[in-house]
Length: 573
Image 1 (cartoon, rainbow, N blue to C red):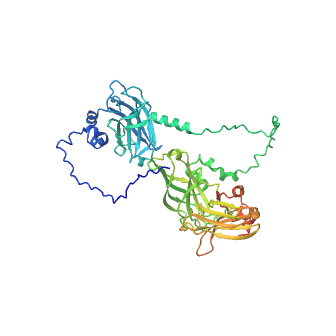
Image 2 (cartoon, helix red, strand yellow):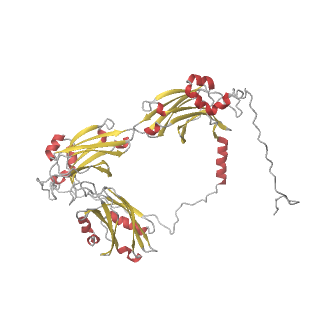
Image 3 (cartoon, rainbow, N blue to C red):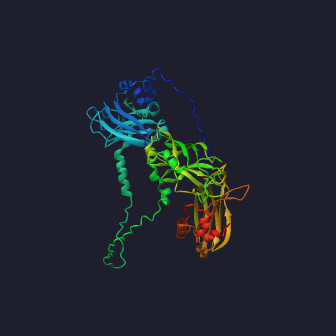
C-alpha cells in the first residue's frame, strides 16, 4: 500500500488564506447586445414570439416549410383522431455545425404527442429523399373529451439519419381548447424551430441494444418433450354404438300445463302486444321513466319518475290483500349484469308512488347499446322477503340514447318472485402451525333493505360450529344507512388441524333494529355442512391452499333454505 499523503519536511504553521479583493465587473460596450445573432437564440424562445405572427410571417422568418394535418374527436368511441396529410418546402438537411447541405434531400417523418404527455407518442413512416412528403396516415389517442380539451397537440417534423442523430426540422403546436374538436378541421401550419435538436440516435441505440444482447447470459435449452416413465402402447378408443332415442307417446306434450310456464315465458308473448293489451291482461300498473346517454362523461342516466295503478300486496299463497297498501321501490340493472344494480327509496303505503330519482351507469356507448335496461317494481316487506310486483325491460339498441326519451311502460310478471338478499365477500386462511382459522369479512353489496326510511344498518355475525356444537360467536361493527357496507374486519378462531374437517362457519347478516329484535337479511354456511356448491368450493380451496388467503363472493340465502340443507344452521340463533 502506498501512502499518497504528501511528505511534510517541517512543522507547518496555520495556513493563511489569501483574500482576493472584489473587482467591479467591466461595463459592456454599447453595442454588446447587438452582436449576438437573434437566430441562434430563436430555437428556445421562438414560441413566445410566434404567437403574434401569422403563418406567412413565420414562414418568411424561419423558412422551415409547412405541415398539413387535421383533427377530430369521436365522442362515441372516446378518442381523438389526428390525420397527418403532407408537408411542403422542407429545408435541406442540416449538419451538426449548422451548415446546410444543399445537394442532399431529407428523409422526413412526423412525431406527435398530446402535451404534457411526451411518453404516449405516435409517428408516421419515413418518406425517403423528399422535401415535400405525403404521409396520409391516421392516429388515435384514447383520451376523455374533457381531458383532450386541456391538452396541446405537438407535431414535430424530424429528418431521419441512419448514421447520426435524427434532427428536428421544426414543430407545430395546437392547443386543443382553441378548436372545435367534435366538428374537426384541417390546418396548414408553418413550422417553427424546436428546442429539441435531436430525437433519437439510431446508431447509439442499435449498438446499445446489441451490447445488452451480448451481455445477456444464455438460457439453458429445455426439452419440452414429456418424460415417459413406461412404455405406452397405442390407446384404443372405445366407440359407443349409436342408440336411437325413444319415441315419446302421442299424448306426451298434452300433459304439460301452459299456465304454469306463463310467468317465465311471458316475455315472448308481450313483444307482440301493446301497452294497453299488456295492462288489460296482467293489471300490474305502469312505470314512467327516461334514459339519456352523456357522451362527454361516458355514462347512462336513468330517471325513475313515477308508477301508477300498482296492484295491492300479494301474500305467499297468492291471495291479494285488498285492504292493504304497497310500499314500492324500483330496482334497476343493465342486463346481463345483475350485480351492478341501483334502487330507489321506498314510498310508503301507496299504489301511485312518485320517485323522481336519477341514477348513472358508467358504461361506454358501444357497450351500452348492447345492454338491456331492466326495471323491477318491488314491494317492500319488513317481516318477509320483498315481492316483485312486475318488471319492464328496454333493449337500448332500439332507442336513441344520445337524444334520450321518456316512456310509459306497462309492467309484466317477473319469473323472479322474490328479491335477492345480497352478496357477501369473504376471505379464509388457515395456519396449520399455529392452529388458527382466520376469517376476513371484507364487504357486502346489494343487501336486502330492512329499514323503509334510511335503508339498512347491517352487521355480520360469524359463528364457529364444530360438529353440531356451537363453539364461538363474533360479529362486525354496524354500518349505518347503507346496503353496500364495507367492513374489512378480521377474526381468528383456534382450530386444531385434526378438527378442521369437522368445522362449519355460519355467516349471518342482520339489520340493526333499536326498537325490536334485529332484522334477518341472509345467511350462508361454509365448511362441513355447507349450504351450496359455491360454499363447498370455497372450503375445498381453503383446504387445498393452506397459509394462503382464499377470497370469494357468496350469495346470501334465506333462513329456511339454510336450515333445510345445513344442520349447522339449526345450531345457531
